[in-house]
Image (cartoon, rainbow, N blue to C red; front, side, top):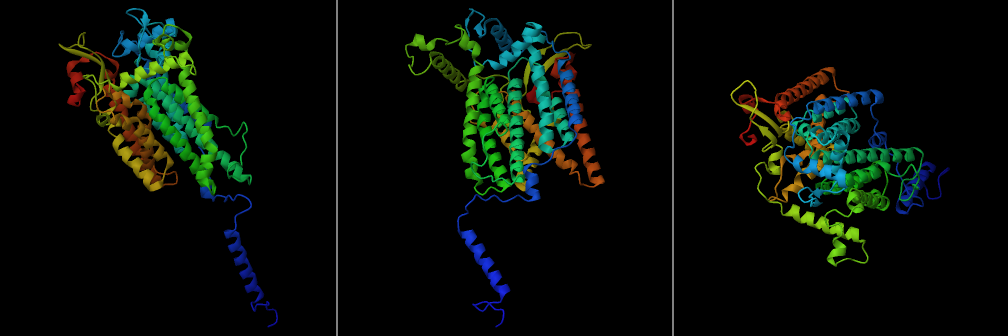
Amino acid sequence: MPGSAPDGRQPQQRLAYDRRVAATLSESAPPSEPVTEAPSPEASNRLAPTLPTDRLTSWLWALAIAGIAFTLRVIGLAHPDQVIFDETYYAKDAKSLLDHAVELNEKNDGPGFVAHPPLGKWCIALGEWLFGFNSFGWRIGAVVAGTISVLILVRLARRMFGSTLLGCIAGLLLALDGLHFVSSRVALLDIFLMMFVLAAFACLVLDRDFRRAALKRELDAGASLERGSSGLTWRTVPWWRLAAGVLTGCALGVKWSAIWYVLAFVALILVWEAGARRSAGVRHWIMDTVATQLGWVATFGVLIVLTYLATWTGWFLTDTGWDRHWAETSGEANPFIPNALESLWHYQWAVYEFHSKLTTAHPYQSSPYSWLFLGRPVAYFYEGKGNCGAATCSAEVIALGTPSLWWSFIPALVATVWRWFAKRDWRAGAILLMVAVGFVPWLFYPDRTMFFFYALPSLPFLVLAVTLALGMVLGPATATFDRRLAGGILTGVYLLIVALTFAYFYPIFTGELITYAEWQARMWLDSWV
């Protein structure tokens, strides 16, 4: 037939056949170059979503919320003008650090055995150095830490949810929580632990965003993203991740309970890196993550250890700390390990033994199962004398979460779980993980003496769960006016209820002298008495 190919096919048929054969061969043969599929516009948006453009205005709002938090916390800070609850340990240990660089036993002026690392007490000591050894001096450090944590949460929530409004809501909720408020006004360690954990998490979120933005830039430039394609330069170093390692080491330098967050942070780094590569279209995204990130994860861990050791600088540089020369005096020195490090290890083991056997009953102890329900708050101070205009008076400082906020955490967590399963929302997964890390490990030690304020490091993430739920209530920016109006009214009513509840409980957060009847009216549950 004129115009037909030798095999009898028409030219058009032959051309189609040749293309199918070529496509089959190209799929079966290994590619000579790594293949990276360009992401769709939707995938590109997931890789590096845009943030709100109101940078200056958003910072002004964030500073305003932080200013409110600071003002609330600093007013009347010196009252009660005495050590309350465990301030009797930490305020005095901080003064000893200022005077001797280590904690000494005030009874015999000799080495003092302490159950927690020094950094939190150094934070308290800074206030004592500035303002003297008085109630204001040993509490102002906690005020600063609490205020910083509010500022961090505003910026973190804005970045995670892409909304300045939701960022301000998150910060305001944290500022108006009773547990956070009281913890920001006493010389205890937990507020510093919470601040460092939150700051480390915020740095990891920044690291996630910057890494994904870098991948997007490489894709836009036509680069291959397979293993080893990106060289090490000043710009490719994950600086925010390294900062998170330092901050995590600081958290460990306040309390050992931060160890669980180390595991969570490593998991987040790997999962977020793998997810970024998958979104970018990297073919072997799991293998690429393992090959390129294990070294940085190891560096992250080394920074944690080095930072933790640095918090013991005063102990290393003096001769009067507990067990400082144990290696030399015990006769068990190891020739391959510096004596100071071996002595510190022995000290840490003694601290572990103390914590693992801490089962002494306490009237304010509580189980983690009761924390979200405010089952047993901790009274830091109570006094029944004074002139309040009634026959009997009460003044109390109680570590109690704002009830209308805390009792909304459970439905907010349910909404967060739904968001994670239904939408595969990375924010929901991260929030749930961080909340779980603050609660679940304690469940494995049912006989240990525990207190409600141990939940403080989880608090910002519980607030983020509420913020996520409120974002769902407000609806997307593309929703109808009526839908946004209804969501805004509901959100405003909720915020007003939280603010009024905080104001109602304010007297027993600050040790204000009130009548016994007024105090009793605020004891909503029998377990609060």
